Image 1 (cartoon, rainbow, N blue to C red):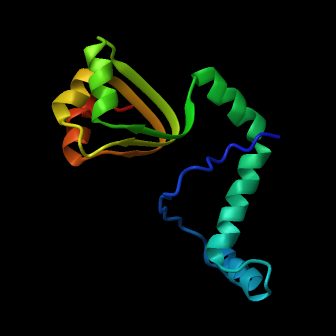
Image 2 (cartoon, rainbow, N blue to C red; image 1 turned 45 degrees about the horizontal axis):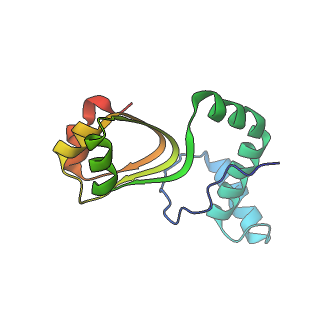
Length: 136
């Protein structure tokens, strides 16, 4: 079975969830009994188990949508090369897309046609603002 979790990504994203008091109490009981080291450990394990259950559907969908999985980095050089070649990038990713701080908003507009990220897009506020109409 192919593991869909990206291995090269050191960054993680913090999320907030709301749980009922009984669910939270049950989680705390499992932590106290030593099944998990803490609440986060249980929640991560539960999420990974659900992703494994749906692994075939995820793989099929990633292939159908032609998504790139994992980390994609775009710096000034890559975007200048695309612009100079007359190409406009259609970025489709599942994971993390980073547009480096050395990328000016004008360069991003010239080189990027669209961005669709299931996960996290990291870019300067100015680049995100310039690309706002192209981020899906």
